[in-house]
Length: 126
Image (cartoon, rainbow, N blue to C red; front, side, top):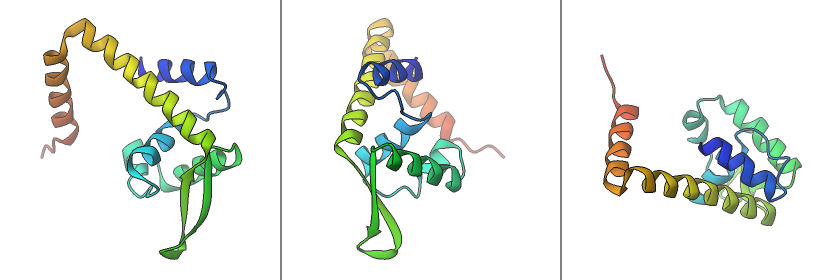
């Protein structure tokens, strides 16, 4: 439901050129700032795949890229106005799914499910 809601909302808002998983990058930057070091593992892709996705987002006007003032060997990325608007649409789509889910099962059940799934995601079994 999240993916479909995000795709539909992005298309309706005129962001129909958003690459697959592009909203993951925009959302990460909107929430956590420009450091993308931990983005690839979170997406389950390689650093090279993230780099290619960033290139596409820069080309399509969602991101700016410039030398990092703190470390000139690295590049810093930031959201353009278009990127900020797209990130806001993506967030709104997620919130609409969350609201519908909470309405269907209740806040307590939803919170418990999130705790269980969070634990499952972090569980290390030998």
